[in-house]
Length: 256
Image (cartoon, rainbow, N blue to C red; front, side, top):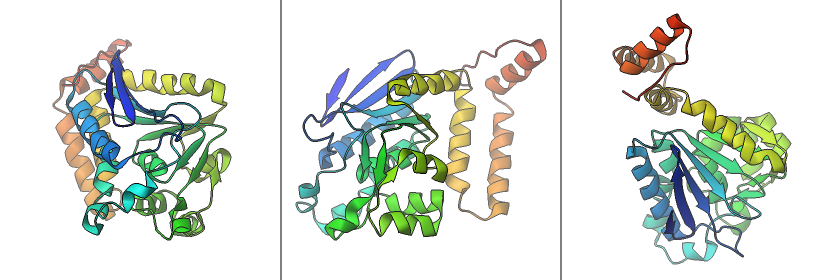
């Protein structure tokens, strides 16, 4: 286990777990933590022993947001580039699962939106409340939210600083699954186990294609998808998948 500014990292059995942990402050994400999180996601992305990453929060919440006072200590140029760090889960080639409960406010929701999957407890509340401080979300929140739920719904959430509860989040497509809080860890583990049986190369390629061509013209997206499809054709994992299918057995993917 390694300790960082406001979070810790543990790895076992191919799964890395990043836990936000700032007791008494609902896991506030400091400016330093943003930098360190970006570095950790980059390192885990290069670690062949890691098949999936879980981003969680200790105690009663995922996180209630960032260090508000810290923004006043940074110059405008530095603040304008905060989205790069928060996008680290999206850039990471490994599948990233956000384990959400309690509050996911501000940068907490922005981090969750940059993950690939969001498994939520039924007590979850999501919000981008920055407008109530005379500010707007500045770490990708407006853009990812609008792409996920549409412009009108994003305006309703952002411009009112409105809280979204778990059931509504599921209906809007903001979370992958909602379960009772007591079943949250089991639900996350089920998804981890499912992903662990798949080809790391196929998962990384699918993530890259989906992230990069989502808002491009259709013909460009199809072209890039086809190129990635062709590249995977020559991999060991694809051959193993085809052979396993023909032999009616589980494939043994090696990530090559």
